[in-house]
Amino acid sequence: MSIRCTVESAFFIAWSCLEKSGELGPPDESANFLLDSIEAQLRAGERRQLMLANRAIDAYRAAAAKGDAAAGREARPG
Image (cartoon, one colour):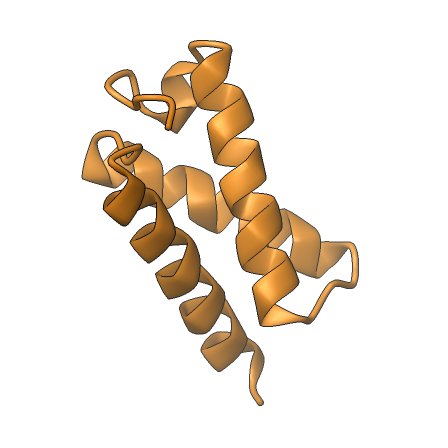
């Protein structure tokens, strides 16, 4: 599987999970946060799409819990 497909799949998994749980904040900020998280993991060598997605979700939730604007000001804890 190509890196592009891996990123797309991981992003879709993370986005869908956060959207279904009602935790997703503003779309642009949320998308950037998730992609940045996935990209950082790829640079560290992670290639498993489910691991990429789960860690991005965890990072998003942690940032939202701290009130981090990068995770979306309107993100609601689940």
